[in-house]
Image (cartoon, rainbow, N blue to C red; front, side, top):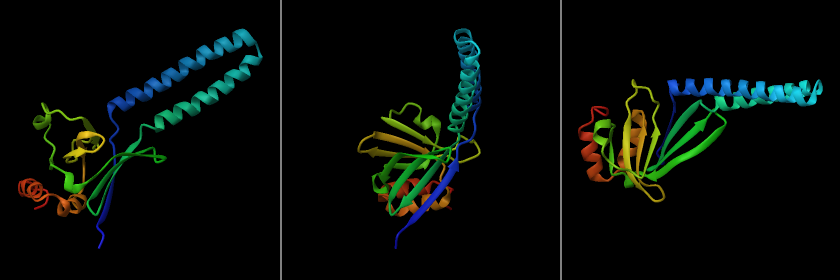
Length: 182
């Protein structure tokens, strides 16, 4: 029987996203004013229609860039194969990482102070960014990414789907100390 579970989590809107949104709007307004000035200065009255097209293009481009800030992550576990995808504004999917559960070296709750001085080739933060959600981490040697640290916010079903495929020492070390599964 196949084991398949997936979970979709939304990334919390953070203050940096607000700064990016304001920057996009201010930048679009600046480009519009400068572009309109030059269009009207060099083309006269016909430059006004060009300014209108510029405004329409900038509105669409700004909307598209701001909507790209809405991010969701999808975790899926299928018979020991773990996949983490990034979904941008529900229109574009990007595979962040995929690996086998038997390759996992550490699966535990994330403690930032424990990982402060550790070096990884890649760190994939697929967590929600919400301090209320419990963040877990996976250390895995990946074929193309090297030593990778994956941060994510799984529910109990995802953890339970991963557990049977872990190496014995990982399973015992990790889950005996975790209150999440008790």
